[in-house]
Image (cartoon, rainbow, N blue to C red):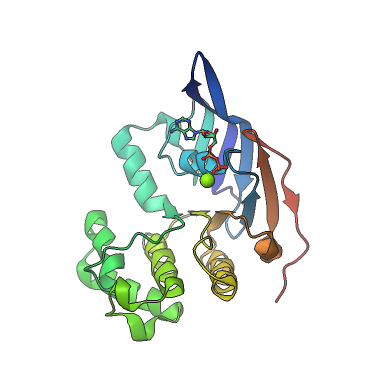
Length: 233
Ligand code: ADP
Ligand code: MG
């Protein structure tokens, strides 16, 4: 099966006093469609840097970033923006929803940028939110939603463009245990149903068994990816 996300010998350096700090040190990683990878490691080990490079938000100092068969390094800024919009879904810890918009509007606003007709976008947004159990919340604004519901809207928004790759940075950090588990199970479900390649940074090692494989980072280096036995029901 083709690789949705392929990082090849990626290094990311930041200036650090007189020297440089390697936030990523020769990292290679492949994630296939329908594969759900957990990324763990201590604070400062480079997890968010890996997501930022994979998201094409930060250009690496060296190495290749290939998304859905396209080499992001060879693209202009405008072409990278299109690639990101069409092929990558990004989910951060805080849902970052716009306070004045309803759940449906949060999802549809990005589709104006994609240039799709509004009607089709509203239908897709409604279907995604209903799939996520948010049917009764379609017209609610963020302050009328629970933390878990807001994170579901956030995930639905990331899926609006039918991405090949889903990058998730500590999605459960602001949630209690039961809501955290529900969010990771939802990510498992969308990874399977939409055949997206999902990378989730997490501190909650408890939920790692719901994913297909785990990779750990330390000092910018990625240890070998370890496959997990078939996941729990
Ligand atoms: P993690 O997400 O695992 O906590 P990060 O990827 O955020 O780690 O950071 C990895 C290293 O890179 C850290 O030492 C951090 O201080 C450094 N770093 C991250 N972003 C920047 C930046 N924009 N400028 C300089 N150093 C950075
Ligand atoms: Mg981080």
